[in-house]
Image 1: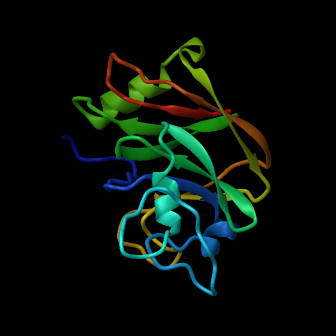
Image 2 (image 1 turned 135 degrees about the horizontal axis):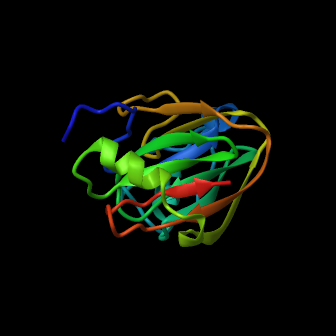
Length: 176
């Protein structure tokens, strides 16, 4: 692999995109605090109570929505993949790396996928705080075991479109 130019998150966990304002409400694999009860089918720790991480793992699709405090977050589910953020003039791309010869090839391919190749995921995102953070769902707001990517987006409502692009084996998610 070539020397990376962009910041990437690489971990064995679903990823969570959330407004920085709501990050404090996420407790990852920690036992829920202050008597908070979490409902989830998956259990990272079968002997313990359900956690926020368990809720993220319950998302069995490529992308899903989850409550985070008083807001919503977007879970990037299925298989854990190296992921980065590419800002665009009217939204951005979350690029998930399955396989490519180099980062440059991957980014170039992601930026040149025709809009018709994307499918509406049925998931939308309302951005009411322009500061967002993408991080490993296994972490609490206080943990930082893996990289985090922070970025800004204009306030508003965004559709989440997905594409599994076979030519470079990447899985971009368009937020437009």
